[in-house]
Image 1: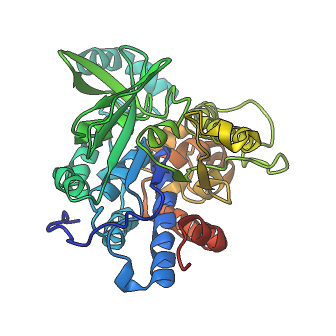
Image 2: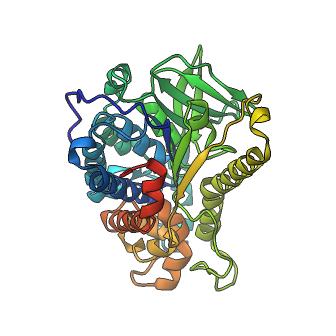
Image 3: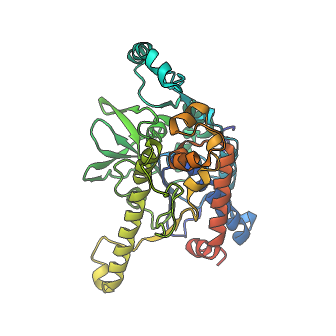
Length: 411
């Protein structure tokens, strides 16, 4: 996909409340966000007409993990929202696993037979000591994809012309244990510091995106220089206690949040691996990743809703004396379980990954169900991503009236 070139000269709309966009993490699940963006672009065109849809509806864009990549790609096209969404959607529709990762040479060893593994143990240890793999998968291909998909050199001019106010991506430092928000803004903004989390201003590079999307254990940590020291960072969803915070600090008055998992899961909705029995390693890993990627958002949304309810009870004159303000949120998350969708596509994973997940036989649906939660983060395959994009479009269309009211489109 070619990089965006010349800037649009259309001025952004400054009359509307400052709108922020938050795209959360989830590996391949982030394809759902692209479907939501596609439908937003369509609803915007239908409500306002093509002549009025130049520019971008999100002056503040924040993202975490794979959501950080989508956020940065969207920010780099802030002068033309529709074109930017089309380019991102094209990339996700054509995505293949080998564009994102290659398996570590150690993982490529055939260990299907126990006796072969025992006979080759000495050779295995020698290779392990020589290679010292840092993760299950090597995400070097993703770096090349980012160079093509995310032309970050456009950001300064987009900010100078008023098309974009700020972009922020988050990562977790393995050295300090802190959750760090890296942000680039049109105007100087004072960094914020909270318990175990802080913000760092400066130009955002592809290394920040690789770090934010480095799923723990799966992808290697990414080195980023902070001041005079080098730190290693992993996925921004780790230790992220307040996902909405960055957009608020950057001035957003209303925020669209697009998640990669169901925020409020009905108790009666059984998971595909809920038939009981001892969990597999893949099932445990999928459960752990879901805790990292999905739980913090639900808690933060509930916190924001409670603050809004409290502010509504305060008399107007007292309210003016506080720094708190109501925050309007619109949260769009999948209406279906993504791991259930992933179970239909596990066979698209590279063979070595299927074996690692315990899915040895093509068509073995029981094994696919157990592996589906973890697989949903690694299924960078066009069949899976297209189905998620279609779900994102359908979920957004189903909430058409809420979307139009949130943005004030169509009067």
